[in-house]
Structures are given as C-alpha cells and as structure tokens.
Length: 410
Ligand SMILES: Nc1ncnc2c1ncn2[C@@H]1O[C@H](COP(=O)(O)OP(=O)(O)OP(=O)(O)O)[C@@H](O)[C@H]1O
Ligand SMILES: [Mg+2]
Image (cartoon, rainbow, N blue to C red; front, side, top):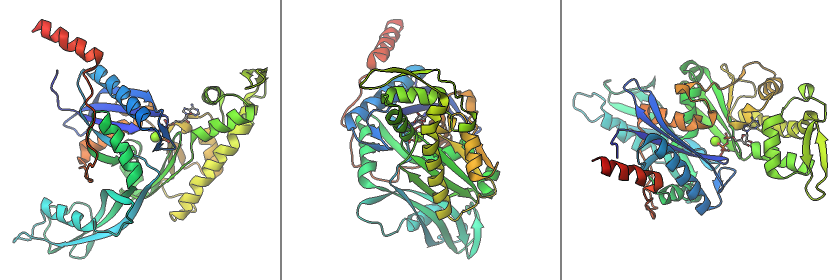
C-alpha cells in the first residue's frame, strides 16, 4: 500500500454520494488524486431514510475513489448541508493568561470554549463554532488576535447546532462504511471556498445551493458566514411534477428534465418532438419542450419565491452589494440564470464558476471545496462520536489483486 499524506472529503447528497481524495500542496491548494461517485439511494430531502442503502452508497463511492488513487481510505471529513442545522450568535470572554499579555493560541482555544456555552434544547447538539470577529480590550473587528497584546479577549461566534437524531444517523452510516470521521464541515463554508471571491464575501453575497432535495441559502458578509437556512425543496420536486403532469415514470421524467428541461416559456420550442409513453395506458405520444416547461416553470418560480422569503427574513428584501451566486444541480438547467435574473429583477445574479483544479463535473464541487477548506482551516471534530465503527471494509477485489501483484513483485 502506498503511504501518502492525503485528505478525504465525503458529501452525502440526496442525489449522489461523492468522495474526494487529495494531497495538500504547500501553497494551500489541494491536488485531487481520487474521486468517487454513487447514486444516493437512502436519502430523501437531505435526510437519511434507509441506513443500509446509504452505507452501500458510501462504500461504493469510497471504493471508486480508492481505486482511482491507489490508496486505502479509513478516515474522512464530512460535509453537512442538513435541513436541521441552526445558527446562534454567541459571545465568549476570557482573560489573557500570559504575563506579558500576548494573546496565544491557547487563549483562542479557551475563548472558543467560552463561546460554546449556549442553552440548547435537549434534541440539539453543537457541531461547529465559527468565529466571526475577535474583540481585544473592547476594540472590535479583529480577525486574528494571536500575537496582539491585551487583557480581555472576546469572540463573537456563530454556534452551529444540529438535530441529534438526523446527524447521528449520518455519522452512523459513515462509520458503518468503515470510515472514522475526522471533522464536520458546513457545506456552505466548503462551497464558499471555491465559489466566492474574498471581495464578494466581504461586501455581502448570497450563496444558494439548489440540490436534489434541499435548497441552502447562505449569507456571507465581512468575510464570514452570517446566516444560513436550508429549505426542503429542490430538483426532485420538479421531476415529481413532471412525472405527475405527463403521467410518466419518475426515471423518465428525470431524464427529460435534464435533456430538454428549460425554465423560460418564451424560449421553449413548441414543436412536439419528444417521445413519451404514459403510465397505465402505454400510449405513445409526442410532447414539446414548451409542454415540459409548463410543469417546470411554476415549481422553479416557487423555489425562487422561497429563496426570496428567506433572504428577506435574513434582513435583505433587496439584493446585497455582491448579489447572488447560484450553484447545485438544478442551476444547470437551461434558462435558469435568465429566469432568476428576471425574478430578482437584477443582473447581480450569477452562476457559480467551477473551474478549480481542472475537474469538469460540478457534482464534485462541494467535495472539492471541502478538501480546500480542510487544508486551509484544519477543522476539528467538535462532537463526541457516540457511534463506533461496526464494520471494517475488506480490501475489495481490486485492492486484493494489487496487493497480490505487489507481493509477487517483492
Ligand atoms: N442539466 C440539468 N437540468 C435540470 N436539472 C438538473 C440538471 N443537472 C442536475 N439536475 C438536477 O439537480 C439535482 C441534483 O443536484 P445536486 O447534485 O446538487 O443534489 P444533491 O447534492 O445530491 O442533493 P442535496 O444537496 O439536496 O442533498 C437533481 O434533482 C437533478 O435532476
Ligand atoms: Mg448537495
């Protein structure tokens, strides 16, 4: 087995499980050496509904990444999108301990521990604490106080909590797939690493991820995540509408949506040339793009409406200075950006550009962002893993074969 220094990220999405494996580079970027993908059969609207199927999907995606990279994966960082996440603003205060009053790393550690003290309902657990700014002797807006002199150190932090049950089901699945979890990373943080520029994060920008089962609306300003909300709506709803409206099966509806789906009625072709077979009657008929759009457009507008409502609740009834950046599978639909610009009445809405490290398929973007985030910020595991590994994965056929060949060569 080749021994290398590498980091692994896992994104258990509603549509697919993705695994990324990369070698950290000294410049803070990551060299991606392994990727794995498998349909996510046990997840609905971002929540695990079938443990066994989810474990199988994770194992398959992990094994694909292992084969590509030629390494065995036994631990990973996990991305969290979760519907059940909540952010609370909290402050922590400590006295600086060193005699010379210089703020050190362990003061940061203590002040973060102090910020962790919040009253949470019994069914919630803290998964992360994100410092927004430090305050030294009353002076606000400090991003990195280490090395500064002071007596009193405060942190203004975002405490991220999750519903214990849904979180631990996810952790349990990853553990059962034979993986120890190194740390949890909010997907919004991971995605912001590759989709947003530092200037956008400073000025104020919404990063919106429209996935298969969920839509995540995250607001960044002053360089930090400020607010976040995940709504249980996404591309699956569009597919379901299309299937019910045209009376076709879900699989076919998904295929048609991706191939011919467009959001704008005005640009949709009205010639009936797409062949469908209706469920039950087995009747063959031809439909037009326009007919598909008639089912797609209302649902997409509803998703926009939900995004707008959440933005207003976060204090932005109008767009922030750096506008809105859209990503996630649904944003790839034809006409999506034009329709969103029309809806928000602004050209300050753009599609995220995924051009990192030459990987073409944007489905991997979250997992690649996760690796970049881990490399830059080295997040720690905040919660106690109560679930223990119950299953060790065998080496797999491909690995056994490679080990066997290596033995012969030795
Ligand atoms: N070209 C396309 N046109 C229309 N829809 C698309 C296109 N490509 C992907 N989608 C849709 O995007 C969705 C998948 O998006 P994504 O991969 O971001 O979801 P996910 O991360 O698995 O789910 P979630 O984040 O909600 O847990 C599916 O509903 C899929 O049909
Ligand atoms: Mg996703």
